[in-house]
Image (cartoon, rainbow, N blue to C red; front, side, top):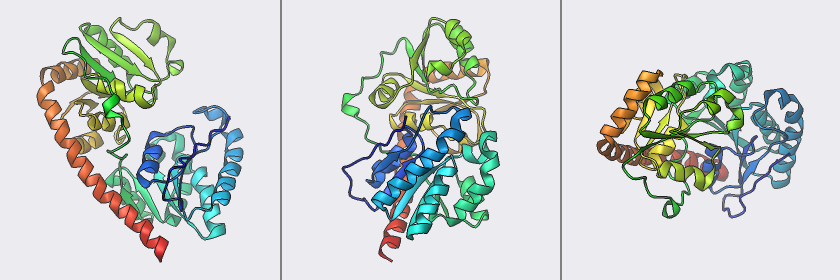
Length: 340
């Protein structure tokens, strides 16, 4: 199966935004901010590594055919997989165009993509500019001789606030657990913490077909498996709960679900990891990745909910102002090159 989604109501048709995935929230958000067409290119099953060698070639052909047909001056391409920006580079080489490579941080530190680092470095040097989500990765790209700016996912996105459900009543306390059943998400300790907190409701997101059957079957009664949520369903979950909880074992994963919680003014419960402490400086309870840590964190978030909610609202405004200033730098760069 191949999905190609195009936003027709655009002004910046000289920019194309592309990702090799059926859907990717960060890339879609940047397409909205750039007011540019979005192309989701994908064949066959998603996130099934064994099938990747069979789908990359048709995806490469589709990428080149789309770009040659529409001839954008700039291509905003998501990395990984690194083969996507490689074929965008070929298009730019053939037609004298330029590309912006948005590198998601797992591409730089996960074992899955470690073997592609030489290709990423080569592509980064040839990009007009690289987008990364942390200053440490900006420094890394600069050490490669590549230009980079730091932009997290946009804080202002088309969320239908007027359609969202109101926050839940004070009791029972509701926790939105942003989860995808990824290897860095210690779900087992959340399940054990929920068992010890029967008066608190936990809503756990994610495609349950990727979950261990034992986790689903043996979960305590205060666990609700929401399934994979998109669009209004996802925003409604965060809106109608009291706090957003997201855990990771990776030191430098800037959790997207946590950024979404900030957007909706929800206090956070996050793993005590360096990059999370650096970014989420207000309205956040940091916990050890242990059952006891989660239990204590949820109790603290409930006890301090009002003050945490005020602080997270302040943080949201600070992040919004800073993001817009940096995004203006990207727009200025694209505008300058378009007219030079």
